[in-house]
Length: 172
Image (cartoon, rainbow, N blue to C red):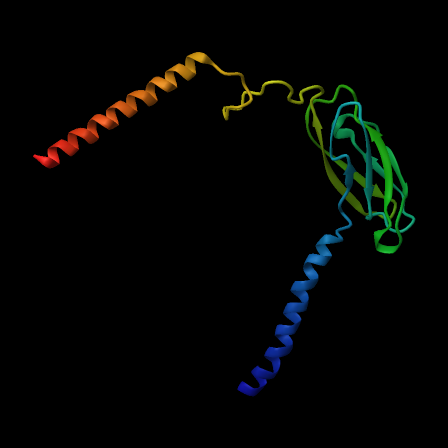
């Protein structure tokens, strides 16, 4: 019985290792992924959508209706075999609010692909002084500097007094 278990343990362990090694590769080539470029943009921008889900020489129809855009067509793009992509373009409507929107594709072969597009607000990129609470990006405030210096001075005087008192108590 033990000999049979030992004989089966080797092949079972090898199969488990091969299966574990193949799993990440299968996920990496997930045909259900829709790549959006750029993946983060502003209203009014043009976005390219591409996927391998449609297969070689595949076509599809994209749906960006969640952000108010028209449907768009995907046509064969670059690559060969498993890396062949279908690609299409759409424009983010000018009145799109900032947020994350799902874009989907239905391929002629029946496959589907999904991706998220982040729409940022126009003109809200930080410029000038930014109040982050960390300091260094806002000009000096004399009142706060004076108050901080007074607290440090009081701590130094109090610490010196305690040390001298303790030192004089140890001698007596």
